Amino acid sequence: MNIQKLTKKIRNRSLNKVKSKSLEELSASWYQDDVLYEGKGKALFIILPTIGCSWALSKSGGCTMCSYIADSVLREVPAEDIINLFHDQLKKHSLEEPSAVKIFISGSFLNPAEMPAEARREILKTLGEMKNVVEVVLESRPEYVNPEIIRECCSFLPQKILEISIGLESVNDHTREIKINKGFSLKDFEEAVNIIKDLKSELEVKAKTYILVKPILTSEKQAIKEAIDTALYAEKIGLDRISFTPATIHKGTLIEELWHRGSYQPPWIWSIIEIINQVRKIVKIPTIMDTSGFGTRRGPFNCKKCNFKLKQAIIDSNLNQNLIPDFECECKIKWLAETKLFDINRSTTRIKY
Ligand code: SF4
Ligand SMILES: [Zn+2]
View (cartoon, rainbow, N blue to C red):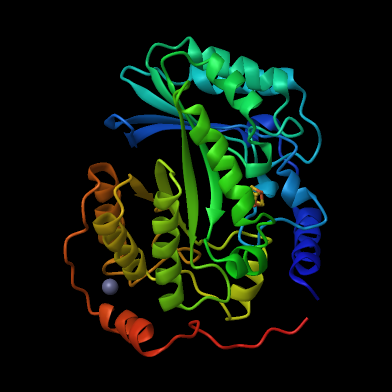
């Protein structure tokens, strides 16, 4: 069975089991410390439900590690409802200092089939009128990035930075196409980045990429190397910022199937530290390491003694953009053995379909 048929099969099975939630239950927001282009600051994160990621809904089944589709309503959401949800979330916070606002729709904000144009315009217009909003961060697959839509988005955001985040995940074609099922080439990605770069002479627009740490069927050693190679590539082609997302086990995904069968483990936190310290030495653009799920059963882990201390060290290093200081724990020797001696995944159980 090829990767798309397999992913689609798993996706359909899991979506049949998902309990439907209301739009209100699926929307959320929080305000926290973050790194802005101008330095340390605050960011307001807003999650808005939509029909769901078009790639995940297509016959491809979507990306092998992602279950954001389960946070979507799988039916068209009228622009008016999205606008109301956005205002409801915005009302919960007072932005008392210069802040970034990051809108997550579990898919592509620039895809009108997911985020209706009317809602997109109203959201950006509102943010454009807020004095303390200095950056607006949106996510999109590359196929929805075009000069017209970027120009229109920026027209609502005078004197503010617009950042478009595109998940490349890996510079390695085999990893991106076969292990992740991302569905786009490096050429597609570079075309989207070039559109953004070309507009920089007239607009305050920037490009960020997400890099997945340890896709399926990847050893710890390969995972470290690919994440670093991808960061070097991202800087080389002109990205403004990098966000690493270490794999966590999302429900209803191929990664979860492999994990259940003992054929996949999320990365060690030691590997994450190795990546961030190496990258901060050789890459000049800001880099953020997402720490979601660290130390949990479904996330990156070391041992109970050091998981949370190291998670905090990574959060601090995100804010300060510095190296993570040396740290010792008895579990480190196991990680060293795995990365230095073996080039295999932490389990070798065969999967049968
Ligand atoms: S990672 Fe992005 S493109 Fe892939 S399925 Fe998830 S939301 Fe869609
Ligand atoms: Zn430990």
